[in-house]
Length: 254
Ligand code: G
Ligand code: G
Ligand code: NA
Ligand code: MN
View 1: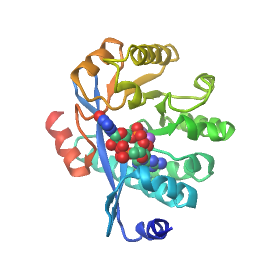
View 2: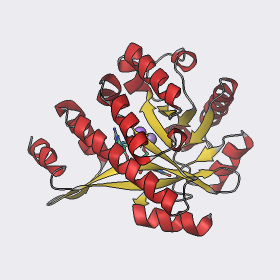
View 3: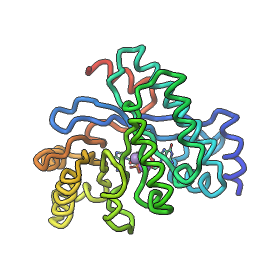
View 4: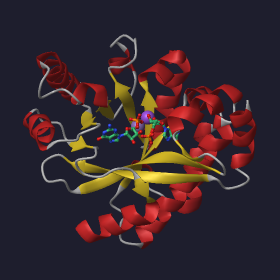
């Protein structure tokens, strides 16, 4: 409860920050974009991970204003990237279940894209399987609206939910993100290697690109590359970092 009280004031007090984790091409490590990951600088407890406060924000409803803040901040970033010659980079933003169910998301996105002259394809929204499946009907409607605008959609933490695969053909998706729990042991656990290979093949046969999460070793990268997985995120390349640091890194490499 203490954390919930603090959380409700944290937006006003500007205690949130977006960190960015590079997303890279599997073949050559070139930066193609970033995932925005929320951080909360708690005045007493220091930096708090989203794993701890997102569930509280989700339950209290605070995730709606917080999610709006993340999207507005993301739109600002895309504007500055264009000005800095980094307009080719894509920015991925996580959506919560409540944001997917609500009716205010699409109008906000329309406004942000129009006001800032942002190309829709520069923005990618990440939705977990479990969030999408909480209300499949409204998710379907949302994904169609996003598709109609050219906003990219990724299914996040793939393989960790308890949902049926049938949504993969019903939902309009652009990308599948393999959860890092499958990537972790691909070198040592033959079952994980088989699951990851089959997931990449399945995604490709459905016309989706694949991003592997949690890539930490060169052997994991080589395996994923040999299976045709297009992009990667993980400590092998970079940890989530402050915006300025990401921009310097992207400017130096591209
Ligand atoms: O940054 P970290 O690696 O600790 O992220 C932990 C989890 O928090 C991730 O799985 C991610 O999905 C979630 N998360 C991070 N930022 C956001 C955000 O802006 N919105 C939502 N809904 N979830 C986020
Ligand atoms: O949305 P999602 O849960 O996928 O968010 C990614 C989370 O994974 C973040 O908390 C991020 O800090 C974490 N992460 C990113 N790359 C790696 C990695 O290579 N190894 C591990 N252990 N965690 C990672
Ligand atoms: Na996520
Ligand atoms: Mn994600």
